[in-house]
Image (cartoon, rainbow, N blue to C red; front, top):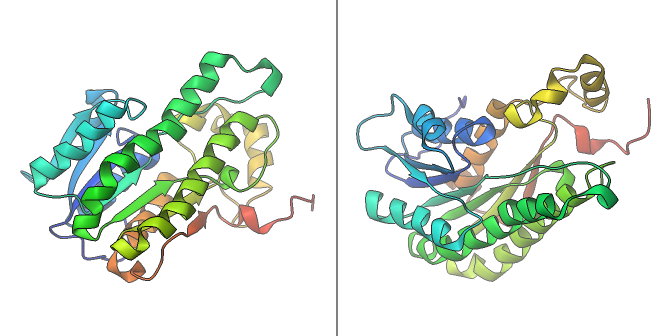
Length: 256
């Protein structure tokens, strides 16, 4: 999963949204690097698939919804109790809804806010005291859409802007206590959530036209960046939002 080793042996990691896509790739990357990993999500079957084949005692699945504060606390406590501490927390669980804001159903907005914003808040509140004890790391999976605008997804972008704001401010609040807080910011990445676009040749041509490296992202592109930010090699990096976007954000957006 990752070309380099980052010394994760013996560390205890929680990955939310770990049943598919970017979250599953991140969880497997930590397992491959020797960590003990808890994957969390709303359905057990995908979580079990992610950790299938993991060494005995090094992986657990925790069913819950980060949008519920009690569930987020239970996820963190499962790592603390099951593995003896919490060293790394990856806030990856996310929801998406696009379309014109005037047409956005309130139920869709509540789903976006609950997962993307409240979910990060609940997870951070539960995890930060544990990470202070371990001098650990919180890594969020943000988005290129969290620093700029996109057509037709104002609500989604607003939630990702909130995540980036949390990351930068929490890095200031918790840095002196030994906790590092960072984010990765992928652009379009081929996952189950984006399958409708990925399967549309015309839509994908528009996506790829804005990517300097000439292809869409894959979950396996994002996972090593998360591993790095959680590692001792990034010991002097906090408050960073690292683009993992194939050069998408290097552009002004003007046509070629």
